[in-house]
Length: 327
Image (cartoon, rainbow, N blue to C red):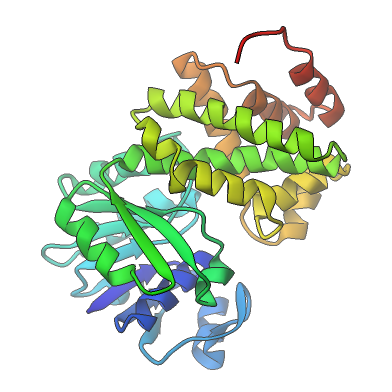
């Protein structure tokens, strides 16, 4: 089949590679003209996934409308802040019977879950999210990986699973789009929290406590937003949370470590050199928690650190100093 992948960052490139290695012809579009030039000339993504050669069945585009022309299944893998704009750009140009999937994690700038934006733009259309505990480099290298595909259409879920599944890439299907989205967004907030704690030298006990209590926060808000508990305890919830909080391949964790070691937000972002999705997700998660009356003390303190320049040590004491309660 011919499939389109919109966004040639690390995860978009890794998904394109997975699909291409399964025999599909891939139209890979990228907004950054400099990166398009590199991909065409060098045939590997030296910016985000250096050293991994792009096979001949990945075709590079800088024109998004050409990339999606006559394509039924389209994967969006753009940063969350660009998600809505990308949908608006392709609105009116989709092929008959087109279906939209995305690997983007986070909320929109209006604090919406991404599937709501897809529905606002395209109405009744088959849609799906591809998410789970995945580092792009490991997927691109063919290391064992398991993910979740959640769709509003069972046939689309099965087709995506068939597109992606291989001996090293296991795909589970679900109908809980909201649950998969919430897990993928809020885990970045908690990865920043764990990174800050590790940067301050708090140790393994604190790391484990933050992950566990962070999961409780994620679950409370997730349920309020329509997620299913079993999804939040699965690959795209607990699985992605543990991965992102515990391995330094995580941009959000590395960002948190820098903050915990005394760096300011801008310096920490510049050192990462890529979008740190957890920064915007922290604001969205905090505001959604306030809107729904959900108690999220870890998220609240990360919000204070990132948006009100709170001292990380004082934020930690605010969490530790909370009144005793049953678990």
